[in-house]
Image (tube, rainbow, N blue to C red; front, side, top):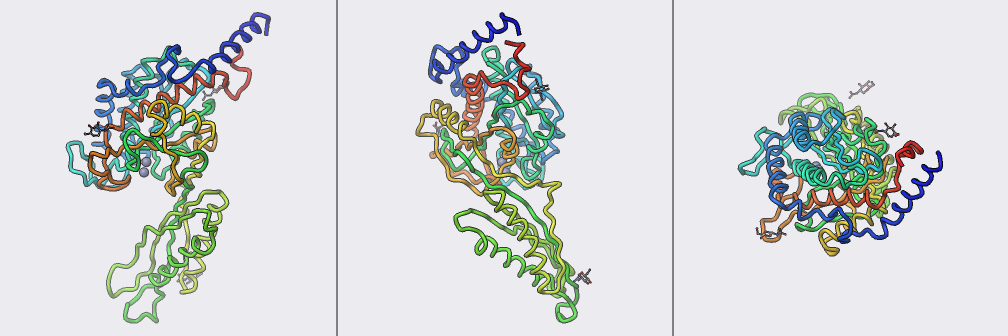
Length: 442
Ligand SMILES: *[C@@H]1O[C@H](CO)[C@@H](O)[C@H](O)[C@H]1NC(C)=O
Ligand SMILES: *[C@@H]1O[C@H](CO)[C@@H](O)[C@H](O)[C@H]1NC(C)=O
Ligand SMILES: *[C@@H]1O[C@H](CO)[C@@H](O)[C@H](O)[C@H]1NC(C)=O
Ligand SMILES: [Zn+2]
Ligand SMILES: [Zn+2]
């Protein structure tokens, strides 16, 4: 590096070092209006998001099948003049706004719907029988596109690159894991994700530092006996009775083997066996979920579920196999929010919404595949409230009566945009892990 490079490096560092001190979210001297809430509420952005959200809501697609949704998103990105990579993880899209250079900060939306019938009667009800956007991911996509529209408008002022992540298959499929494996996020310094929530008022958000959502795994077990006439049980081996005992024994794992102060769940949500009043079936299939807040507790549950199912089935002379279905449903790690990003979130959300609208929440046993990002880069996940006290009470996510209050859209879009841009302003010194590569650019 010659003298002039050193000199320019010196100047750049001084400018960078000075910037964070004079920068604040309300500082009118900064060029970029980091508070994007007003922009997101303008009809050109609000109506845009509502239109996209309704279109996606009418055409829900399950994990890794989001082909039309992906096409719609790409058409909007093309329209906005935002470059992107596609396909990533089958239907995923990674978009870029800003300088195209370091630092990089990512904002993420999931795209998949649920295999359930919508029971809400409204103009934009799901047109696909048995499929529904019952978790609000249609709104998440609309919010990220809304943020993209706002950010594109301010692209020249963005000091780095905002990476838009549209990921497939959050509902059990682990789309985030495949996005990470595709390597597209390797130079990203931080990632933000959100979820709409009926449990917080509109205009408020909730989150916490550290563990927020549980690690999650699924299991399926087949318990095999010997079928026969229900009136001659001595000639059969009854898998219904054996499975009933298996389920009861599984309940003892949390109540008797786990530390009461270490939250865990084992739920059997599926029990399939038998076809008639007077037949003992050959086999029964059960399935369920297990959740915990540490890797150790999670692995212990996994281990004991397998042992208990097999051993308890054997008590009634049945054979059992346990499958953890990791191919289709990878175990989700615990969602752990980064402490520094928590402070960043509190300051940005506080100035956008008011400090008393930023709630600290208790951990939940729900799970999110956002945790796969957090395993490789600092990440922050938060809830965006949508309950308006003067409207009807909203149903929980995954209910067939679930509704999105579309007034939430500007809040999500503004938070995405403001969190990303202010992160870049606060972290100008971040360079890619491959050190040295960017010195030439200074
Ligand atoms: C990350 O940065 C390195 C060094 O500049 C570069 O070689 C690599 O292609 C980048 N990766 C991605 C996914 O952009
Ligand atoms: C269980 O497996 C053993 C060993 O393969 C076999 O002999 C037995 O018949 C099986 N029992 C049932 C109920 O399937
Ligand atoms: C809640 O709904 C009422 C009536 O539709 C509306 O006037 C009000 O602005 C809404 N509240 C918020 C925070 O948007
Ligand atoms: Zn969900
Ligand atoms: Zn969800």
